[in-house]
Length: 280
Image (cartoon, rainbow, N blue to C red; front, side, top):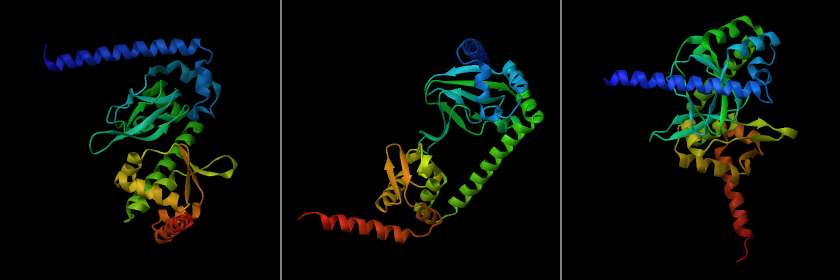
């Protein structure tokens, strides 16, 4: 059999296997303690729509379970479905210069993705893998477009998300325009800052240093030194897997390329104080 025909046959077998997996997963969800309707009501895109819309969506959506480290989406693939995460956790990944996978953003239950391909017909813009066993819902393109175009609440949610994406892209371009490598790292960290319970400013689910390096277009060693300078200067504090921002004003200045000398002076002063306090 010619190589091209073999490739077509293999892809057809994979597609049939995936369809069987989706059918089996759908039976599990509809027969389990959490019905499909309950799961769909928890989706961010469907929070403000009528039950009739959710019922119509549930008739067309198909579910598939992914194992840990399994690819859910490959960058460049055709976007034939809108995807919704029902359970588990996913991660958007990029490839480093040496070909390694580097984790970027996380996808949490209730999140949706793949909407750009539904809107403009383009290919998938990123690769996504499962980092725990996960169940993903696939809504075919035609039904997704119907959902988008006939429901103002869905359109509003999409527009708000697109606005956030555009703002992030604008901030990212501004960040890359900074000439100081440290400032680009500080900018990435500031953009990840959120207000937690009690008004505490934190950076949750901090990407690894290689991921920050890719976003800031610097080396991993630069990321490590920049974070250490923030800790030494008491701008941030490590708290297990997150960072607590103790001086948001200083971090904002550093992200604009300002106050770096002030930070170094403070860090050096702290080091000198510690050195002087040690017994001889």
